Amino acid sequence: MKPGIHPDYHPVVFQDATTGALFLTRSTITSSRTIEWPTTTGVQTYPLVVVEVSSDSHPFWTGTRRTLDTAGRVERFYRRYGQRSS
Image (tube, rainbow, N blue to C red; front, side, top):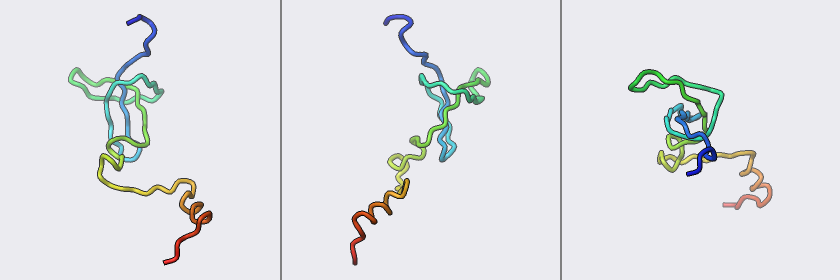
């Protein structure tokens, strides 16, 4: 591998915004926020990145199903195409 062309790959803590779960992994992403993380050698400071969805809250991995109506898409569909009468 050529030296000097690869991004900085370092430990990062990701936090799920919905559940609050924390994951320590490695990434090239940077953040100005930090968090203290206990390790076997003592407490370390790592960058903290908050994500909207992770495996802890994603419906595929949790087995739950949620319907999200962002920006009134369902209402807009009904206005455009109408509802079927029962």
